[in-house]
Amino acid sequence: MRQTLISSATLVGAAQALNYTCTPSAIQAALPQGASVNFAYPVAANATFNVPKGDTGYPTSPPNLPALCAASIQVKSIGNTTYGFGIFLPEEWNGRFLAVGNGGFAGGINYLDMASGVRYGFAAISTDTGHNSTSGDGTWADKQPDKVENWGHLAMHGSVVLGKQITASYYKQNATYSYYSGCSTGGRQGLKEAEYYPEDFDGILAGAPAWWTNRLQPWTVRIALVNLPTTADYHIPAALFATLNKEIIKQCDPQDGVVDNIISDPKGCNFQPLTLLCGSPSANATSCFTGPQLDTVYKLFSDYVGANNTVLFPSFYYGSEGQPFLISGNAPNSLGTQYVQYFLGKGASWNFTDYNDDIIALSDSIHPGNASVGYDLSRFHAKGGKVLSYHGLSDPLIPTGSLPYYYDHLTRTLKPKGINVDEFFKYFLVPGMGHCSGTQTSMNAPWYFAGANQQPVLGSDVYSVPGFEDKKHDVLKALMAWVEEAEAPEYIIGTKYVNESTHDKVMRQRPICIYPKQAKYTGKGDVNDAANWKCKSLY
Ligand SMILES: *[C@@H]1O[C@H](CO)[C@@H](O)[C@H](O)[C@H]1NC(C)=O
Ligand SMILES: *[C@@H]1O[C@H](CO)[C@@H](O)[C@H](O)[C@H]1NC(C)=O
Ligand SMILES: *[C@@H]1O[C@H](CO)[C@@H](O)[C@H](O)[C@H]1NC(C)=O
Ligand SMILES: *[C@@H]1O[C@H](CO)[C@@H](O)[C@H](O)[C@H]1NC(C)=O
Ligand SMILES: *[C@@H]1O[C@H](CO)[C@@H](O)[C@H](O)[C@H]1NC(C)=O
Ligand SMILES: *[C@@H]1O[C@H](CO)[C@@H](O)[C@H](O)[C@H]1NC(C)=O
Ligand SMILES: *[C@@H]1O[C@H](CO)[C@@H](O)[C@H](O)[C@H]1NC(C)=O
Ligand SMILES: *[C@@H]1O[C@H](CO)[C@@H](O)[C@H](O)[C@H]1NC(C)=O
Ligand SMILES: *[C@@H]1O[C@H](CO)[C@@H](O)[C@H](O)[C@H]1NC(C)=O
Image (cartoon, rainbow, N blue to C red; front, top):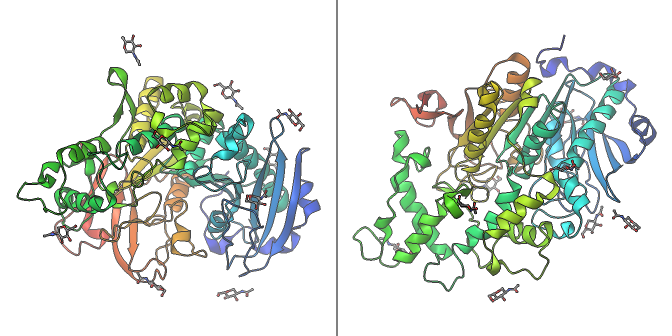
């Protein structure tokens, strides 16, 4: 029998602390050939783990840790490549295993998110994905298909397998359950695991998954070109996006029953951009839009469509224009251009102005690193795994539309196999949330639910949802309840603190409903109290 959800008062490890051996040789003994320990040492309660110099992707050192054993391992991979991973083994262990994800093209061990995990009592790992770089730097991929394969899936899977072996050896018992939490590239890594390595996890939390690498990266170039060059008559300068944002909020906010600057159903909004046209009575003469600029607005919120009306990539949703936007500036984001240059082999001399739809076909045919995630998650379903996914409705980096697109195609793939997707894959869209975390200041949307990468936004020693450390407010706990107690989540309560960095006073809370439900105000009571909202079916 697997044990049921245990409280922190009955942590497995507490009584056995003295039996744990945190030395390089003890960790090495748990590892097969080809894997070697870089370091292993104990970190005292309340101490800081100092991230080793040169961890370019994740340089922040987590402070105020629970007592734990910290180790890092280097593993031989395909060709001449290696990857590394880090592991935190807390003295007060909850009996479970957690892997956390990466972001963008970043290479580095994400000790900060591992720290979020050990505060719950998880034994936590993170892989460097086999290279060393910042999130926006894809130059390491140049003529290195083996490194790209490590980034695509090999490093995560290999690190999980070895991380579990270390965990079992250290505590002299296997983890009872294993979980994953990641956002963006981290969301992709989670879904990839479900597809390729269904045995690795029981529960996967996949935020804003960058699952369609083959398309998302080229789209990143293409969407920027919609607004470039800056000299074009259709170009929308950065300052005008604020005007667009105001008008979109004005038209799209009231739909949920409350005028509060938060857009809950951007897809349900019949936005009329003509109100912004220069010369129309509703437009501001010094910040109005020309006809060609309105074309750009239209393109930003429409799917990317290729030959024969084929959807090549889904679109942004209304509201994302209020965030630091992917399409402002005078060149596409490097996550797009460097992908074409280094993952698709076009080389440094390739100019984004040469972009056309052939790049999509090339990307599909190369399928760099097998990173893109397919729709057949039937093996993960068969073993009883659960996926909880989410996406910010105002995501300005990865179009919100890409998660519903995935869900639809997952359903189309699995329904004919007799699988009810709802049994194992649920998602929710977060009103007003940007990319993985945060909200624009004039919206103040309740975006916080202890999702992947969220704790560090409040502070580098934050545990769960401060003041509300339960499965209604904390999405990782909701996933654990689903996996371990068969208690499927119907909503997560999002929290907006008055000041994120002090996170003592709450400004507002609101349920964020599992698709296809949506939160509606009951019409009575404080709109900032989650109790006065109900999840209602859209159909
Ligand atoms: C760590 O900090 C907590 C709370 O700040 C305190 O109660 C505890 O005694 C500290 N532990 C150690 C070992 O310093
Ligand atoms: C990672 O790259 C940085 C910057 O290029 C370098 O300073 C550092 O030594 C590298 N770290 C490792 C582990 O190779
Ligand atoms: C591995 O490294 C050796 C020596 O540096 C080189 O000759 C060989 O081509 C490399 N192999 C691969 C697959 O990169
Ligand atoms: C953990 O599980 C594996 C595979 O089921 C088993 O071989 C191993 O003995 C277990 N380890 C411990 C410490 O129980
Ligand atoms: C019109 O736009 C300008 C420039 O953005 C702004 O300063 C001004 O306040 C706006 N006027 C009104 C009436 O909104
Ligand atoms: C569009 O459809 C035509 C006719 O079915 C087909 O020959 C052509 O290959 C399609 N083009 C693309 C890009 O799919
Ligand atoms: C790309 O092409 C544009 C337009 O021809 C040119 O202005 C720009 O300098 C080129 N950029 C690079 C990096 O070559
Ligand atoms: C990547 O996928 C291809 C098939 O699409 C497969 O042949 C290859 O073995 C995969 N690579 C790895 C490392 O799994
Ligand atoms: C939040 O609180 C911190 C710490 O007291 C303070 O430095 C910061 O200015 C506050 N931020 C806002 C937006 O009030």
